Image 1: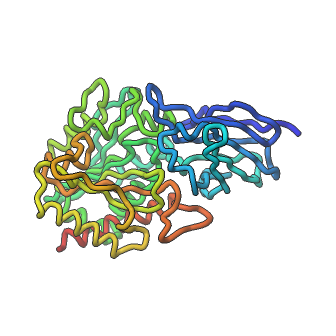
Image 2: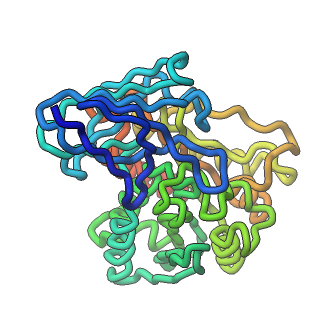
Image 3: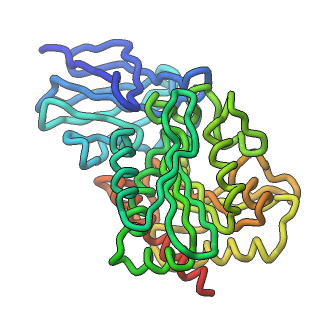
Length: 376
């Protein structure tokens, strides 16, 4: 039996190969550059057509979020279009915490990832296709440390300033799948939700806040090893030019409504996190957020309010995080949308778990909820 081959030297690739024996391999995660964060993986395996693979990713008790591994199944694709799930099991006591992935590929190459990847090539296609639509304005907000453009798409004639931005944490690729769904709605002249929002709002969309981390295969940081969602109080050109550029653009327009799109490793559900605890909190501002959350909960089974993060105590919100900073800085109704790496348990899908297709559909529900929120 020949040994399989494993590669990760491509856009968003991440894995270290410790050993290979036939169709079995012992692997480990590579840390984000200049950072202790590691959780994301993305690699391809070839040479195992019709044979069961046994892939062991070790050392995971020292990963960024060990609670993300129990009850998690790895994502797998043989055509890089449809992403299913490969049966996986976690043993916290084996080799410092080991995820064992078992899968029998029908073809000679299979790709494995922590979540379905969203490549920079697909990102550029997304931006190009949106930018050519009527009424859509493209703006490069600035450059990343690796010299990549920070893309922003704006549209609409209304007074409400709406900012939608995603992938501050690059390994949370579900966030850009959500953005693809949102842009499908907003750029389609036949979509009533998009038409209403463009009439009532001026919308600004940043599909990927962290292109460098995305290409490098990072979980959570940019090219300098910086967690961008802890930079919003005092961003700098040296550490966090991405946040500095986006916040400067927001200062130009103001912000009435904002959604920061993310993924959560451990919680098996979609949920929102708000801005409780900001120094300038008012019940009116808070009630507007809770009203949006209630509308979304009523609209779709792909959202829930029982699981989520603990709220900050009065006056103790972390203003270095974007949702809190925007609520404090602009009086905005701002929020963080979290989607699972596992599945939305209240409406589970055994074959795919939480998937790109469901991310895109949830985006439409979020925008439709915004229409209803504006009408109240």
